[in-house]
Image (cartoon, rainbow, N blue to C red; front, side, top):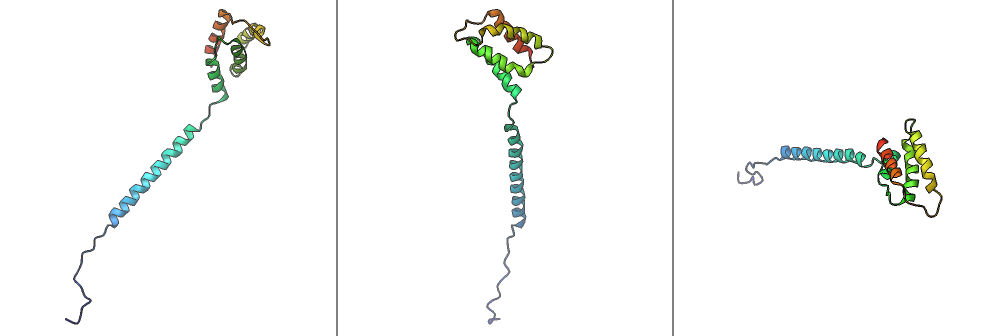
Amino acid sequence: MEGLKDIKDIVEVHEHSFETLMGIILFSLLIVGILLYLFLNRRKKRKKPTAKALAKEALNTLDYNNTKEVVYGFIENIQAFLNEKNLEEFKNIEGELNQYKYKKEIPALDESLKNRISTFIKGVK
């Protein structure tokens, strides 16, 4: 037996394959979850407002102290909301607003006209 020097005692081998497999699976699930979350939220953020939504926002932010802005902004942006029901009322308001158009210096809007414009804007959908 003294001539056999390459035989050694039995050594316990620590195997971590199960823990490694579970780590890989959890890491993969985490990566898939993050990618799925980013993909689903990317579609929500890229949604652009429609022309109708932009026109509604512009109508709601009209400054009634600036007469020209009200006249031109109202006539331009209200076009998206016109239908058979409110077309006649719009024609009446537009007829009254024509006296404020195409002039260098214009007077301030009448309070009654301001009220009609604001109620018309609130009534459109």
